Length: 236
Ligand code: DC
Image (cartoon, rainbow, N blue to C red; front, side, top):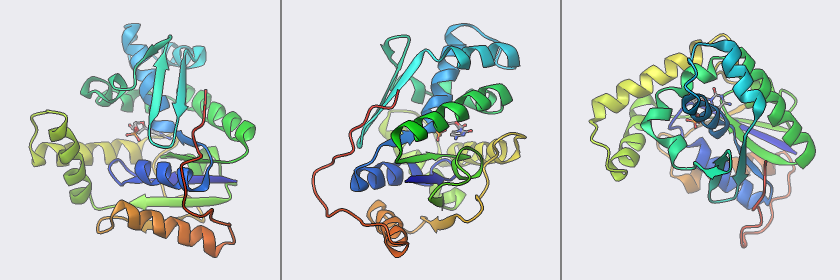
């Protein structure tokens, strides 16, 4: 059973995807982390972020691995833990160049499909999971929220991390990311065909999870009773 969750930055899809996977006891794949770690690899190698061939070669080398557990995703690059580093502003601001590379997308989408095939069941989240990577997924969700609400959520995270930013700056960044995510030629952010949209602006995480579970249940999926997390998984 493949479940895709797509949506813009700050929509709450990552937390929702993780919680859903934990509840169903199946692996969870954070595809944004893949684009982030390839970005970090390119930066470490001093690659020009517009050099399509060099970026594609970096992705093809696949010197990273992801350990996607129910409450965390640990990412290693060339044997070193880079979980925090791939969330830094330095990587944040540059990942859109890597995400726009057709060669990188081809390689990462192929890797995602291989994982899905090998694991059989997973919750996978990103921008193009229901539209490009898994158009035949069993269930597709699109999680959304207003730019203002998404910027508010992001501001809380950044302030907690000690960053000095204003709401206006974060909102501008959200708008910019929406634009680049939606306007790119390959794998743009879009509502996949047959996806159920969940608007999370006024919903807590618990409510988002309830909505996802209700949709799956309506479609006949047996939801395991609440219990200890059983979804710890290795997704290399
Ligand atoms: O979800 P995130 O913020 O960690 O994503 C990081 C970047 O990768 C962001 O610029 C969107 C891009 N991305 C993508 O293009 N396709 C995906 N399937 C996942 C993320």
